[in-house]
Image 1 (tube, rainbow, N blue to C red):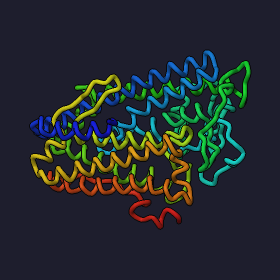
Image 2: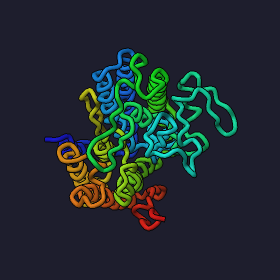
Image 3: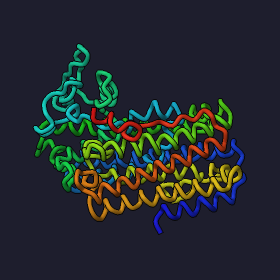
Image 4: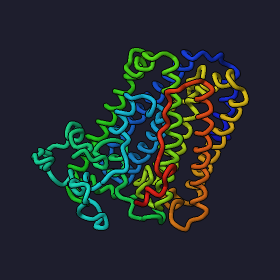
Length: 417
């Protein structure tokens, strides 16, 4: 039995086990947030340790270990994304750790096919690693030493979101390099010698190692900040408490609906499918996008059922939205749980296909009918899930919920303009 089925079944059991009062439901929500960010921090620290080992002794083995640590770090973090849209403190912070897509020429060398300039981004090929002095907004920036503070100052340089200098995807690019395979098989293939000053490929190997270390340090620091925000005396919990239980429920459903619809079904999936563009996949350097989508979907389940399985195997659970909806409208509860189960089934099918048939960037390729259909099946399930969430919002009389949309779903013609 896979985790998804176990969680869906467990969710039904939780619904029968807990009496649902809104304050207790919101408390469970906050407790799961804390556990998820603690797990994200723990795995980011493990990633930092693997990066240190790679830099100390570059080899195929230490590079692969760092890549595996990055993949492991994505598992708990993606499950926290259900907290983003309903909590301003998370949404304002999220761009520092998970911004995408990125113009990788800002960071390091790129293939000639990338081009040398962009009409919209003057930092398109700034190449921080190769240059110890940079010109930003008419000012010269000393980049002789690549530090977390320098990366913070260069993140979204010029106010351009594609200038991603920090976070998971900057680290991903440094560990894998560009994926130059288009919609063909294969991920990025950066050699370990790109980090070896004694046998250097790609040039500036010491600075590349310095950048990777600074980015890992910064990721840990950013996650430490978010863990603190969800402690009992943290700012995120205080913000939830300020508006009372109704505001807490509003935050929960805003996050669930917006991740399910506008972000995951729309910006992360339908847009890339419409364009048949591998540059529009979430973990594009590592070909890990199927897992990112899967754990986003699982994060929605976690919040709805008030149950999260931690990295160490322990479970955090309590009174949940599932309990509250079942007490309010049992028929709607059945509908909502069926929609969630269908979305997880489609996410699991997508994940299985990626692990046994072809990578996600191949699935969205033009003319790949079966691959396109697997992606579309999850999109359809997420949209249907969101429609049921909208009925939950009405049943709970939460008028302040605003679910984010996406042109790719709401106005597809605009995507091609």
